[in-house]
Length: 279
Image (cartoon, rainbow, N blue to C red; front, side):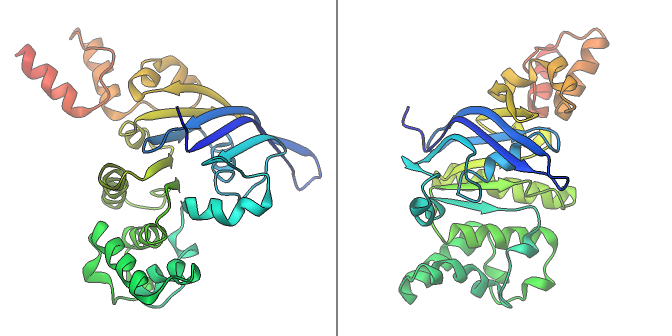
């Protein structure tokens, strides 16, 4: 495999307010394949956000190495190139929206790259179309819903044309409808444009749509595999303080009622299909 991102024995230590050293990451090894969509889950404090911030140079390893398309994130001379390769979308879109008009906000990143006006216009139009935001291009961001703001923040990253986008709990502040719309947009970008996608989330119903999952706990990788493989170890998931996907919970309830359900069911559609076959 020729990974886009590789962490090699990555450790990160910071000083807490008391001056005590805290090891947020402890010998993490992982690879992110080009074009895949990877979910990183874990409780608060598990290290998932600290890990993600190494992927575009926001943090520098205390030990070990992070390679982005072959570039070492420990070498500060590589950081500008790495940040062109890997974009980030955070929990609170207000922290990323800076202009008074949507299309101006999306154009901000490409303008900072020094691109010609015609190229910037094409990139803004593409980003708006990718997320179905054309009708909002002249709207003030501060008058949009939280879900719409998050989509505008994502559009601003898309306009930079990165190879990878890291989404750090992008739906944490949204209602269920907003979460669904943002997740659908993230999945569509990965599917249609081949953008390598890293989704940090504590919503298991989001993680099930990814190609692969990593479960973090106290700075180490506790579990890794496809969603079916990870959720197939239900007792371990629960011991780490995480939940089953809703469909997996329903399947387990049906088993307790005497209905023999396959152990790898994690989608509601799979339950419906299996029950229809039984009927």
